[in-house]
Length: 130
Image 1 (cartoon, rainbow, N blue to C red):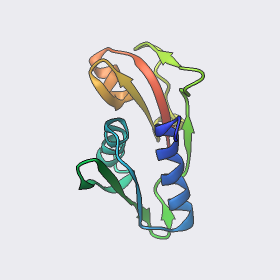
Image 2 (image 1 turned 120 degrees about the vertical axis):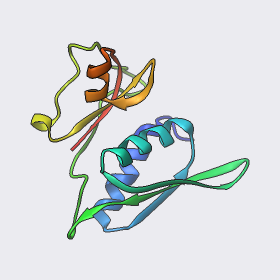
Image 3 (image 1 turned 180 degrees about the vertical axis):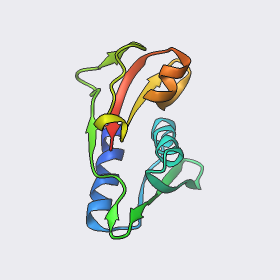
Image 4 (image 1 turned 90 degrees about the vertical axis):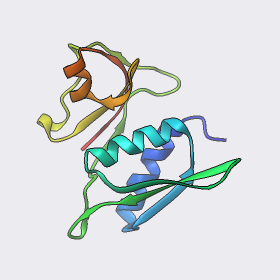
């Protein structure tokens, strides 16, 4: 049983990219799918798709590379199940001088820190990616 599904998703993507794998498959959840869609929209992963049969859907994520090196070079889980971390619209962090992204869970859904600042909302900071 996984107690931290987002942390598990991030660890599997990071480990697969460091191992040179092209695809990672893991159990589907709406939260994992939303985080993976944000990573896809920002260009950190190649593909995101849901597959399988009704009770047990799976999530297939294509890892993206620039030449031989993976696009994702670092991942940090900010809000953990034992210690939640919330930010308002003024304290959303800038990641690696603007070269990375922060992923937030807001009342308007899962989005990047940049989008949350534009909308003027804060929320739970799930992770930072660079």
